[in-house]
Image (cartoon, rainbow, N blue to C red; front, top):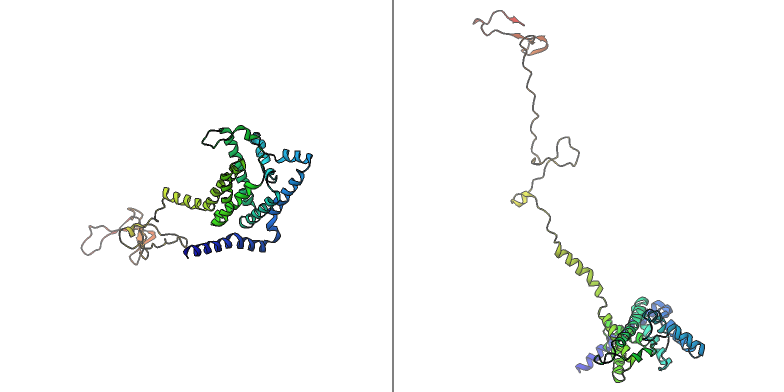
Length: 323
Protein backbone atom coordinates (compact mmCIF):
# COMPACT_ATOMS: atom_id res chain seq x y z
CA UNK A 1 0.00 0.00 0.00
CA UNK A 2 2.83 2.40 0.85
CA UNK A 3 4.59 1.59 -2.43
CA UNK A 4 1.39 2.26 -4.39
CA UNK A 5 0.91 5.59 -2.61
CA UNK A 6 4.51 6.59 -3.31
CA UNK A 7 4.15 5.61 -6.97
CA UNK A 8 0.93 7.58 -7.32
CA UNK A 9 2.45 10.70 -5.74
CA UNK A 10 5.52 10.40 -7.95
CA UNK A 11 3.45 10.04 -11.10
CA UNK A 12 1.28 12.98 -10.12
CA UNK A 13 4.29 15.21 -9.38
CA UNK A 14 5.96 14.25 -12.64
CA UNK A 15 2.76 14.85 -14.57
CA UNK A 16 2.51 18.35 -13.14
CA UNK A 17 6.19 19.18 -13.70
CA UNK A 18 6.92 17.49 -17.04
CA UNK A 19 3.56 17.54 -18.87
CA UNK A 20 1.08 19.99 -17.32
CA UNK A 21 3.47 22.91 -16.90
CA UNK A 22 4.80 22.78 -20.52
CA UNK A 23 1.23 22.50 -21.81
CA UNK A 24 0.28 25.66 -19.88
CA UNK A 25 3.32 27.40 -21.35
CA UNK A 26 2.28 26.27 -24.83
CA UNK A 27 -1.24 27.62 -24.28
CA UNK A 28 0.18 30.97 -23.17
CA UNK A 29 2.90 31.32 -25.83
CA UNK A 30 1.14 29.69 -28.74
CA UNK A 31 2.91 27.99 -31.68
CA UNK A 32 6.05 30.11 -31.14
CA UNK A 33 6.85 27.86 -28.15
CA UNK A 34 7.61 25.00 -30.59
CA UNK A 35 10.08 26.89 -32.79
CA UNK A 36 13.19 24.90 -31.83
CA UNK A 37 11.35 21.58 -32.09
CA UNK A 38 10.08 22.39 -35.58
CA UNK A 39 13.48 23.63 -36.78
CA UNK A 40 15.24 20.52 -35.43
CA UNK A 41 12.68 18.13 -36.96
CA UNK A 42 12.72 19.82 -40.38
CA UNK A 43 16.50 19.98 -40.31
CA UNK A 44 16.79 16.23 -39.78
CA UNK A 45 14.24 15.59 -42.55
CA UNK A 46 16.11 17.93 -44.92
CA UNK A 47 19.53 16.36 -44.35
CA UNK A 48 18.07 12.85 -44.52
CA UNK A 49 16.47 13.56 -47.90
CA UNK A 50 19.64 15.27 -49.13
CA UNK A 51 21.77 12.27 -48.17
CA UNK A 52 19.71 9.97 -50.44
CA UNK A 53 21.46 11.43 -53.49
CA UNK A 54 25.10 10.93 -54.32
CA UNK A 55 26.03 14.60 -54.56
CA UNK A 56 23.92 15.36 -51.52
CA UNK A 57 25.63 12.67 -49.48
CA UNK A 58 29.00 14.26 -50.22
CA UNK A 59 27.68 17.69 -49.18
CA UNK A 60 26.23 16.27 -45.96
CA UNK A 61 29.52 14.57 -45.15
CA UNK A 62 31.47 17.78 -45.76
CA UNK A 63 29.09 19.99 -43.76
CA UNK A 64 28.19 17.77 -40.82
CA UNK A 65 30.32 14.65 -40.94
CA UNK A 66 32.22 14.29 -37.66
CA UNK A 67 35.09 11.79 -37.27
CA UNK A 68 37.44 11.29 -34.38
CA UNK A 69 40.43 11.56 -36.72
CA UNK A 70 39.57 15.10 -37.88
CA UNK A 71 41.49 18.13 -36.61
CA UNK A 72 39.96 19.59 -33.51
CA UNK A 73 39.00 22.94 -35.07
CA UNK A 74 37.24 21.23 -37.97
CA UNK A 75 35.41 18.87 -35.63
CA UNK A 76 34.20 21.80 -33.51
CA UNK A 77 33.06 23.58 -36.67
CA UNK A 78 31.01 20.62 -37.87
CA UNK A 79 29.49 19.64 -34.52
CA UNK A 80 26.48 22.04 -34.62
CA UNK A 81 25.47 20.78 -38.08
CA UNK A 82 25.96 17.16 -37.04
CA UNK A 83 22.98 17.52 -34.70
CA UNK A 84 20.71 17.49 -37.77
CA UNK A 85 22.47 14.70 -39.65
CA UNK A 86 20.70 11.42 -38.79
CA UNK A 87 22.68 8.29 -38.15
CA UNK A 88 22.55 5.83 -41.04
CA UNK A 89 21.94 2.76 -38.88
CA UNK A 90 18.91 4.14 -37.01
CA UNK A 91 15.28 4.58 -38.16
CA UNK A 92 14.93 8.24 -39.00
CA UNK A 93 11.21 8.66 -38.31
CA UNK A 94 11.40 7.24 -34.81
CA UNK A 95 14.35 9.52 -34.14
CA UNK A 96 12.42 12.53 -35.44
CA UNK A 97 9.56 11.82 -33.02
CA UNK A 98 11.92 11.64 -30.04
CA UNK A 99 13.77 14.72 -31.26
CA UNK A 100 10.58 16.79 -31.61
CA UNK A 101 9.28 15.74 -28.19
CA UNK A 102 12.60 16.41 -26.44
CA UNK A 103 13.11 19.87 -27.95
CA UNK A 104 9.44 20.83 -27.43
CA UNK A 105 9.43 19.92 -23.73
CA UNK A 106 12.83 21.52 -23.18
CA UNK A 107 11.92 24.78 -24.91
CA UNK A 108 8.67 25.12 -22.99
CA UNK A 109 10.21 24.16 -19.64
CA UNK A 110 13.68 25.70 -19.93
CA UNK A 111 13.59 28.35 -22.64
CA UNK A 112 15.34 28.51 -25.98
CA UNK A 113 18.80 29.58 -24.91
CA UNK A 114 19.13 26.96 -22.19
CA UNK A 115 17.73 24.27 -24.49
CA UNK A 116 20.34 25.06 -27.15
CA UNK A 117 23.09 25.14 -24.53
CA UNK A 118 22.18 21.75 -23.03
CA UNK A 119 21.81 20.12 -26.45
CA UNK A 120 25.15 21.43 -27.70
CA UNK A 121 27.01 20.82 -24.43
CA UNK A 122 25.97 17.18 -24.17
CA UNK A 123 26.80 16.51 -27.84
CA UNK A 124 30.15 18.27 -27.61
CA UNK A 125 31.04 16.44 -24.38
CA UNK A 126 30.50 13.08 -26.07
CA UNK A 127 32.49 14.07 -29.17
CA UNK A 128 35.48 15.40 -27.23
CA UNK A 129 35.52 12.47 -24.81
CA UNK A 130 35.69 10.04 -27.74
CA UNK A 131 38.80 11.88 -28.95
CA UNK A 132 40.35 11.45 -25.51
CA UNK A 133 39.50 7.72 -25.52
CA UNK A 134 41.09 7.30 -28.94
CA UNK A 135 44.21 9.14 -27.76
CA UNK A 136 44.39 6.85 -24.71
CA UNK A 137 44.36 3.72 -26.85
CA UNK A 138 43.18 0.26 -25.83
CA UNK A 139 44.21 -1.23 -22.51
CA UNK A 140 43.18 1.56 -20.11
CA UNK A 141 40.72 -0.53 -18.08
CA UNK A 142 38.59 -0.83 -21.22
CA UNK A 143 38.18 2.94 -21.39
CA UNK A 144 40.44 3.52 -24.38
CA UNK A 145 39.46 2.94 -28.00
CA UNK A 146 41.52 1.63 -30.92
CA UNK A 147 42.68 4.12 -33.58
CA UNK A 148 40.31 2.58 -36.14
CA UNK A 149 37.40 4.13 -34.22
CA UNK A 150 38.47 7.55 -35.50
CA UNK A 151 37.16 6.59 -38.97
CA UNK A 152 33.61 5.90 -37.76
CA UNK A 153 31.00 8.53 -38.64
CA UNK A 154 29.78 10.22 -35.47
CA UNK A 155 26.59 12.12 -36.24
CA UNK A 156 22.98 12.31 -35.14
CA UNK A 157 20.90 14.14 -32.51
CA UNK A 158 20.61 11.14 -30.18
CA UNK A 159 23.12 12.51 -27.65
CA UNK A 160 21.25 15.84 -27.54
CA UNK A 161 17.90 14.06 -27.10
CA UNK A 162 19.23 11.93 -24.25
CA UNK A 163 20.85 14.95 -22.62
CA UNK A 164 17.67 17.05 -22.75
CA UNK A 165 15.47 14.31 -21.29
CA UNK A 166 18.01 13.65 -18.54
CA UNK A 167 18.35 17.33 -17.68
CA UNK A 168 14.58 17.81 -17.46
CA UNK A 169 14.15 14.72 -15.29
CA UNK A 170 16.87 15.91 -12.90
CA UNK A 171 15.67 19.49 -12.41
CA UNK A 172 11.99 18.42 -12.20
CA UNK A 173 12.75 15.46 -9.87
CA UNK A 174 11.23 12.91 -12.26
CA UNK A 175 12.80 9.48 -11.73
CA UNK A 176 10.25 7.69 -13.92
CA UNK A 177 11.00 9.95 -16.90
CA UNK A 178 14.70 9.37 -16.33
CA UNK A 179 14.23 5.58 -16.24
CA UNK A 180 12.29 5.65 -19.52
CA UNK A 181 14.76 7.92 -21.36
CA UNK A 182 18.26 8.26 -19.97
CA UNK A 183 18.13 5.01 -18.00
CA UNK A 184 17.11 3.03 -21.07
CA UNK A 185 20.05 4.52 -23.01
CA UNK A 186 22.40 3.52 -20.22
CA UNK A 187 21.09 -0.05 -20.25
CA UNK A 188 21.37 -0.20 -24.04
CA UNK A 189 24.96 1.04 -23.91
CA UNK A 190 25.88 -1.62 -21.36
CA UNK A 191 24.13 -4.42 -23.27
CA UNK A 192 25.59 -3.46 -26.67
CA UNK A 193 28.78 -1.43 -26.16
CA UNK A 194 29.72 0.67 -29.18
CA UNK A 195 30.78 4.22 -30.00
CA UNK A 196 27.23 5.61 -29.87
CA UNK A 197 26.60 3.90 -26.54
CA UNK A 198 29.66 5.53 -24.99
CA UNK A 199 28.58 8.92 -26.22
CA UNK A 200 25.12 8.36 -24.75
CA UNK A 201 26.63 7.53 -21.38
CA UNK A 202 28.76 10.68 -21.50
CA UNK A 203 25.72 12.76 -22.51
CA UNK A 204 23.70 11.36 -19.58
CA UNK A 205 26.53 12.09 -17.12
CA UNK A 206 26.99 15.64 -18.47
CA UNK A 207 23.26 16.38 -18.27
CA UNK A 208 23.10 15.06 -14.70
CA UNK A 209 25.98 17.30 -13.63
CA UNK A 210 24.39 20.33 -15.29
CA UNK A 211 21.03 19.48 -13.74
CA UNK A 212 22.53 19.20 -10.25
CA UNK A 213 24.22 22.58 -10.76
CA UNK A 214 20.91 24.16 -11.78
CA UNK A 215 20.06 27.09 -9.45
CA UNK A 216 23.37 26.92 -7.63
CA UNK A 217 24.46 30.23 -9.21
CA UNK A 218 22.07 32.12 -6.93
CA UNK A 219 24.00 30.98 -3.86
CA UNK A 220 27.28 32.55 -4.98
CA UNK A 221 26.32 36.24 -4.45
CA UNK A 222 24.97 35.43 -0.97
CA UNK A 223 28.08 33.45 -0.01
CA UNK A 224 30.31 36.20 -1.38
CA UNK A 225 28.50 38.88 0.62
CA UNK A 226 28.69 36.75 3.76
CA UNK A 227 32.41 36.20 3.26
CA UNK A 228 32.95 39.94 2.81
CA UNK A 229 31.12 40.63 6.08
CA UNK A 230 33.36 38.10 7.85
CA UNK A 231 36.53 39.67 6.45
CA UNK A 232 35.46 43.26 7.13
CA UNK A 233 33.03 43.32 10.06
CA UNK A 234 31.00 46.49 10.43
CA UNK A 235 30.92 47.65 14.08
CA UNK A 236 28.16 49.63 15.80
CA UNK A 237 27.92 53.41 15.46
CA UNK A 238 30.17 55.35 17.88
CA UNK A 239 28.39 56.44 21.07
CA UNK A 240 28.88 59.86 22.68
CA UNK A 241 31.21 60.18 25.65
CA UNK A 242 28.39 61.14 28.02
CA UNK A 243 26.52 57.95 27.19
CA UNK A 244 29.64 55.91 27.85
CA UNK A 245 29.87 57.46 31.35
CA UNK A 246 26.26 56.70 32.14
CA UNK A 247 25.02 60.31 31.82
CA UNK A 248 22.52 61.43 29.27
CA UNK A 249 23.90 63.65 26.57
CA UNK A 250 22.84 67.32 26.91
CA UNK A 251 22.01 69.07 23.66
CA UNK A 252 24.08 72.12 22.95
CA UNK A 253 22.80 75.61 22.30
CA UNK A 254 23.60 77.53 19.12
CA UNK A 255 25.94 80.47 19.29
CA UNK A 256 24.62 84.02 19.31
CA UNK A 257 24.77 85.48 15.84
CA UNK A 258 25.40 82.08 14.26
CA UNK A 259 23.19 80.99 11.36
CA UNK A 260 20.08 79.01 12.16
CA UNK A 261 20.84 75.36 12.69
CA UNK A 262 24.57 75.91 13.36
CA UNK A 263 25.93 73.83 16.27
CA UNK A 264 26.94 75.41 19.52
CA UNK A 265 30.57 75.44 20.60
CA UNK A 266 31.82 72.44 22.49
CA UNK A 267 31.28 72.56 26.25
CA UNK A 268 28.32 74.97 26.21
CA UNK A 269 25.07 73.33 27.23
CA UNK A 270 21.63 74.30 26.02
CA UNK A 271 20.13 77.07 28.20
CA UNK A 272 23.43 78.06 29.78
CA UNK A 273 23.74 81.88 29.77
CA UNK A 274 26.73 83.19 28.02
CA UNK A 275 29.33 85.19 29.97
CA UNK A 276 28.81 88.95 30.00
CA UNK A 277 30.90 90.85 27.55
CA UNK A 278 33.97 92.32 29.19
CA UNK A 279 33.85 96.12 29.65
CA UNK A 280 37.09 97.93 28.85
CA UNK A 281 38.74 99.79 31.80
CA UNK A 282 38.48 103.64 31.77
CA UNK A 283 41.46 105.52 30.55
CA UNK A 284 43.55 107.09 33.43
CA UNK A 285 43.16 110.76 34.07
CA UNK A 286 45.91 112.89 32.69
CA UNK A 287 48.44 114.48 35.03
CA UNK A 288 48.08 117.78 33.23
CA UNK A 289 45.35 118.95 30.93
CA UNK A 290 42.91 116.33 32.29
CA UNK A 291 39.18 116.49 32.08
CA UNK A 292 37.40 118.97 34.46
CA UNK A 293 34.80 117.84 36.94
CA UNK A 294 31.28 118.16 35.78
CA UNK A 295 28.61 119.74 38.04
CA UNK A 296 27.16 116.29 38.68
CA UNK A 297 30.48 114.92 39.85
CA UNK A 298 31.48 113.44 36.45
CA UNK A 299 34.28 114.47 34.21
CA UNK A 300 33.71 116.34 30.99
CA UNK A 301 35.55 115.21 27.94
CA UNK A 302 36.18 118.81 26.83
CA UNK A 303 37.07 120.62 30.14
CA UNK A 304 40.47 120.33 31.81
CA UNK A 305 40.72 118.11 34.85
CA UNK A 306 41.10 119.61 38.35
CA UNK A 307 43.53 118.01 40.78
CA UNK A 308 42.98 118.47 44.56
CA UNK A 309 45.96 118.74 46.78
CA UNK A 310 45.77 116.24 49.62
CA UNK A 311 47.62 118.59 51.93
CA UNK A 312 44.71 120.95 52.38
CA UNK A 313 43.46 122.31 55.66
CA UNK A 314 40.76 120.57 57.61
CA UNK A 315 37.86 122.68 56.46
CA UNK A 316 38.47 121.62 52.88
CA UNK A 317 39.21 124.98 51.55
CA UNK A 318 42.34 125.91 49.84
CA UNK A 319 43.76 126.87 46.57
CA UNK A 320 43.13 124.64 43.67
CA UNK A 321 45.95 123.86 41.38
CA UNK A 322 44.81 124.07 37.87
CA UNK A 323 46.73 122.17 35.41
